[in-house]
Image (cartoon, rainbow, N blue to C red):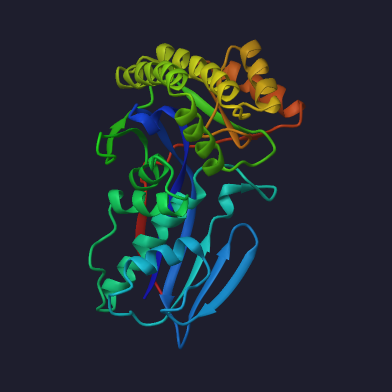
Length: 335
C-alpha cells in the first residue's frame, strides 16, 4: 500500500502579528502544495526530502531521522508500538522559486501532510496512534518547531483549504471558519527576491511588546481594528472595503516595522507597493515580512495585469496563485 498526502500552502490576506494577540486573520490556501508519499520498506526506514535539493536518510527507530518535522511527529508517539519500516518522500519544491523559499507556509504544510500520512500508515499496519492528529495538536507541534512561537494560521489553512477566518481564543486555542472571497476580487503573488525567517521576526515583535507595552498595545490595536474590518468586509462580500483594509494594513505593517526596528517592509516591497499604487491595486507583504512574498489584490483585471507587467519589467517575479479549496488530502495509491 502506498499513501499520498497533499497539503497546500497559504498567503495571509490580513492579520499578521495582530493575530498573535487575539485579533482575527484572513488566510487563503493556495494551489502550491507539499506532497508526501509513504509506503512499506524492508529493514530500515528511509526518507528523502526535496526542499528543493534532494537529501536522503536511512535510520532505524527509535533513532531520529534528522528531519525535524518528521521527528516531532515520531517523538509524539514514542510510546506507541512501532509500525513496520517505511520509506517516504517529502516534496516541497513547489514552495521555492529559483532555489529561494517563497514564504507560503512550507513547514506547516509539510507537517500536516507528514503527520496525516504517518497516522494513516500506522493505522493500516495495526499500530494506530494514541490520538489522531488534530488542528490543536498540529498547531502545538508547529509552535514547537518554531521555538514556541507562531499563531498556527498556516497549519489551519493547510488542513482546511479555501479562505478562512482564523482567531486564537483567550486560552490560545485556534478557531476557524470558512469565508468566501468577494466575487470579482483577484490576486497575485509578487516575490521580492529574498527569503526571510518568520520565527526571527515574530521573536523581535514579541520582545518589543515586552520592552514597550504601551506603544505596542496602541500599534496592535490599530492592526486589530483593520483586520477586523477586512474580515467583516469579506464576510459581507464587500470587495471594495476588503481592498481598502488590505492597503491600510500594508501601511500599518510598515509602521510596525519602524517601531520594532525590523524591516518588515523591505525596500523591494516598498518599490512594488509604489507601482501598485500607481496601478490602483491593493498591495501588502504577506506573512511576517522581511522579504518573501507580497500580495496584490484588485477587482480590476486590467489594473492587476498592468501591475504584473510593470513589476516584471523591474525584475520581480510574479507568482500566479490559485485558491486551493480542498485542503489536506490523503489517498491510497495503486501499486
